[in-house]
Image (tube, rainbow, N blue to C red):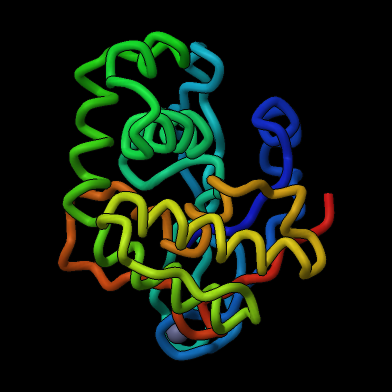
Length: 209
Ligand SMILES: [Zn+2]
């Protein structure tokens, strides 16, 4: 699970375990969840590798536990959602090639190429998911006419534009928003996992900082 954390990475790290983590209902049975344990993982932000605490919540009804990632990370990726998103927006949006985009955010171009490749593979699915979410939130309808990558990017923009009129989302930013509503799977290799956009149950509201 991914929560729409609006905090800068530094502030998240500084708060550590004392952070007021949200307690969403269990995604399987809607039961109440409590903080159970957690682990540390790496995240690379602004060219620096850092360690963050990631809590694990456990459902009091079904007993299943879920990792609660902050939206500035993506599942199984070292770099922040903002870094990955900046590269995807530039390259998949047709603005430039992978190498200059990778150099600008300080990641190996092979890593950046992997993100763009995954995004292209999933672009149709992402476009449909985010376009549907945009409409669900009362935003503008997006047409798939401009090619799948353009469709996916336009869908993300439209959905975020609509969400930004709801409390809290503007401060979260577009790529954390995209991470949050896709369950961190924006560029995940595992395409068999369901895309978590549509359905308000998955649409966890942001917590004010
Ligand atoms: Zn449960």
